[in-house]
Length: 102
Image 1 (tube, rainbow, N blue to C red):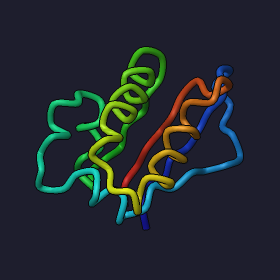
Image 2 (image 1 turned 135 degrees about the horizontal axis):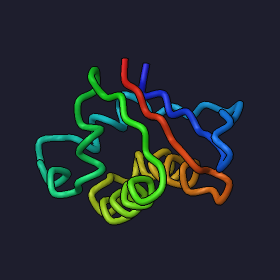
Image 3 (image 1 turned 180 degrees about the vertical axis):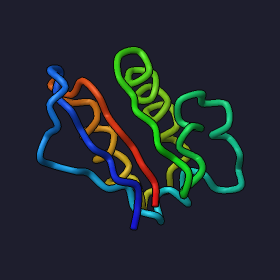
Image 4 (image 1 turned 30 degrees about the vertical axis):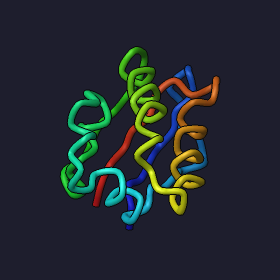
């Protein structure tokens, strides 16, 4: 199981679609390069089992910026899933994102 990403609209209502970030993509993002440590919001997702974060407002905008800026470190094999994650949380109707690990 990967991270569960629960999306909420701007009124705080939970959307029906739940997005999953695979365990493999998580491993790729947080590999031993340690580059991710300089991305303040992204690093909150580094612990696979203990992650339980909610992002909204500026925190959500900063997470999206971190993910976009970190994209250069993602191997081509995982880029489609990574971009799908960015696109899912970047939609205009999204007001809050809750991300939880196993």
